[in-house]
Every structure is written in structure tokens, then in C-alpha cells.
Image (cartoon, rainbow, N blue to C red):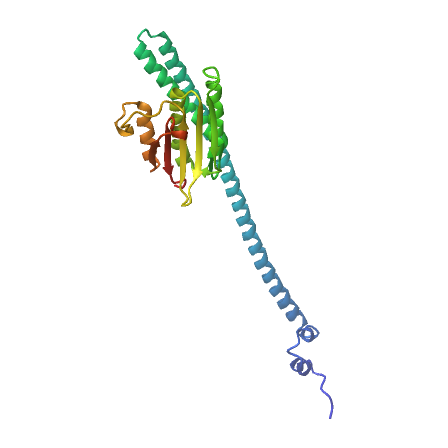
Length: 272
């Protein structure tokens, strides 16, 4: 029997082998063109996918840059607003103090002086909170220490025997609570300075249930009998009561250490 030399026979026997197909004289150009076309299609798909990914990455990069720019702008605006607020408060303090010194009515002068001191307190609280505030909140122990250092410098000429002592636990408080609590602390300390001549203790304690207590005690003359913060005519106590209500806290008062002076305590939750 004579062996067949037909390409058809050889091609049919090896049709499943692509390499063999490429060696067929009659089908060579068709097989190669088909393979090239398939490769080019696959390459084009990869290029299209790469292009989409590149565009997506570029868009994300642009969005991140815009976000960073907005954050920087927000910080700049916040800083500028804080400076303007402090400058405005200082200007008001100066005007009130000037008016207090120039008025001939003693009662009016005293009221103007008190108003000037309270505006100065606002400025002092904002300045201290602004310098120590972090993303997670305000380190309140640090705030109390700075506040007491500031007040100690202010009263250094009044009495050499008077001292301010801070006994505070480490506690980070959200700004929404820290701001009114800072005003409460300032009012209580200022009130103790007004009446006490010796040691004033400012404490911050964390309770077992997670609540916290801010206390200010002194060795002054103490509280009058049947003292009621809600019934007092003093503006300072009214401000304190309003701020305690703002943070949903509770105000307590009692005798100070060794049954001398007075102690005011504010029980509050350090979480918003």
C-alpha cells in the first residue's frame, strides 16, 4: 500500500495540535493570522483595563488632593476665627475696664469691672482650650493646670499665703463638654479666690461607673446657712447652674476639707 502525501491527511491527524497547524503549507497563513488577531484582541482588552485603572487612580488622587486642600483651608479658617474671637474678647475687656475706671458711680464701676473680668475669663478659657485641644478631645487635667497657673500669676500680688493646687486624673473630654466645664471650673476657682485667703484645691476624679467629678474646695468662711444655689442673686452661681444643666450634670456643695470653707462639686459624664 502506498502512503499518502496529502496535506489533508496529515492535517486531520494533527488537527488538535496548534504547532502542527502552523506547519501546514496550505493553512499556515490562516492559522498565524488567527493567532495574531486573538493576541491583539487580548492585548487591547488589557490596555483598556489598564487605561480605566489609570483613570480611576488619577481621579482618586485628585479627590485626595482636594480633600487635603479643604482640610488645610478649614484649619486656616478655624485658626483665623479663633484669633478674631480672642482679639474681640480682649477689646471688649479693655473697653469695660476703661469704663469701670472712668465712672464715678461705685456700684456701676464694680459691675463694669465684674463684666470685664468675666469677658477676660471667656478669652482665657478659649485660649487654653485652643492650645491643648486634640482630635479626640481636650486633656482636661492639662487645662486645669494651665488655668490655675494663669490665675496664680494674677493673684500673686494679692496674697502670698494663697495657693492653688490641682489634683486631677488624666481624662480626655470632648470639646462639647470641655468648653462649658472649663467655664464652670473658672467660675468656681474665681469665686474661691474672692473669699478664701489660703489653699484652694481643684480636683478631677473618675468614678467607678465611668462618670467624673470636678471639685473646687477652699478654706474660706464657708457657705451661709440654708444656702441654695438656685435662689442666690449672684450672677456667677447662676452661670454655673446653667452650664451644669448644659452638660446634664449635677451640682453639689458642702463644707471644705477639715470642715472649713466650702466645696463645690460637679458630677458629669465625660462622654457626649
